Image 1 (cartoon, one colour):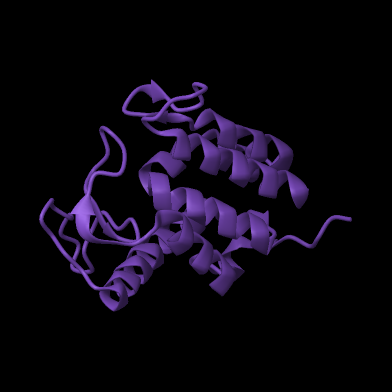
Image 2 (image 1 turned 30 degrees about the horizontal axis):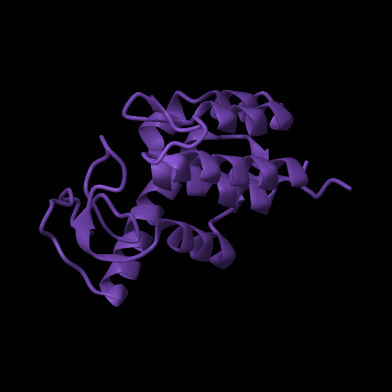
Amino acid sequence: MNKVRILVAALSLSAAGFIGIVQHESYTDRAVIPTMGDRPTVGFGSTFHENGEPVKLGDTTTPARALVKAQAHISKEEAIFRRSLDGASLQQEEFDLYMDWVYQYGTGRWASSSMRRHILAGDYAAACDALLAYRFAAGFDCSTPGNKRCAGVWTRQLERHQKCEAVQ
């Protein structure tokens, strides 16, 4: 049974969605480069500090500050995400999983994504399938069996795709 879709303008990331993001990102107290070619992240995958400065290797944080950093990052991205889907509708679960994607890849990539185009056209199943196109990190195909470089990138996409399909 399909759930009701709500105008994106009326949605926000749920508590479960926020917890899912920080669980997937894993906490680090020191800035790291999570996969080859990525920018430095600290806390729960934050690439920027609350003041907008980019995270640099050597930066540190605490769990409490990391949550504040993640929330600040998400709030900023969430506003851009909502504007990018003006007039479109999503289920809460879809909103959460696409925000999870945006947290990982950014609103710049979201703006030109086929997921966004499919949602705006009302083709939600195609938007789900488009998640699988994002399997690369620094030009490397993370879906390559047995890879040790970025297997988590592909695993996360498969999880998102499965969740997305489950609510269609």
